[in-house]
Image 1 (tube, one colour):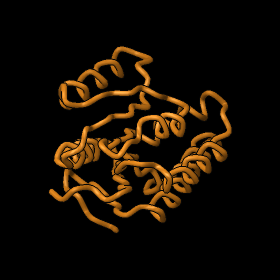
Image 2: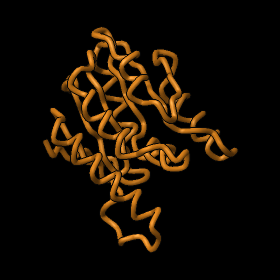
Image 3: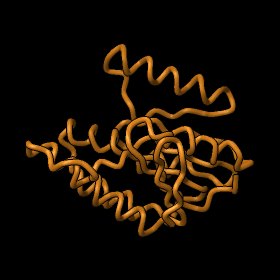
Length: 172
C-alpha cells in the first residue's frame, strides 16, 4: 500500500470499509498515527462502536476526541512526523448542526486551512448523496452540507477513494 498523499479523502456508505481502509493507509505510512474522532458516545451502542474502533487500531495510535472544533484540533495535531486521520466528517457536520453552530462557516474554515496543515491528512466521510432526497428540511440541509464539503475537499485533495463492499475505488 502506497504512502498517502498530502490530503486523502475516503468516502463510502455505512459499513463500506472506509475507516478500515483509512486506518491501513495511516498504519503503513511509517509516520506516527493520530486519530481525530468526531463521534460522541451519547448512548451505549455508540460507546460500543467507539470501543471496537479503538481496539482495532491498537496502542500505536494516539486518539484525540473532538466533536466540534476540528480546525483548531488539526492545527494543533498536524506535524511533519505524524499522519492524521479524521473519522468522520459527517459526524462532525451532525455535531455542528445539533449544536446550532454555523456549519457553512466551519466548513469554509476547514477548507481554508487544509493547505497549511503540516502532515499528511486522511479525511473519512459518509457518501450520503446517492439516495433519495430526504423528506425534511434538516435532513436535506445535512445532505447539502455534506455534498458541498465533499466537493470542496475533493477539489483540494491529492487522492480521493470511494469504498464499496470493502473495495477501494480510486477516483483521483
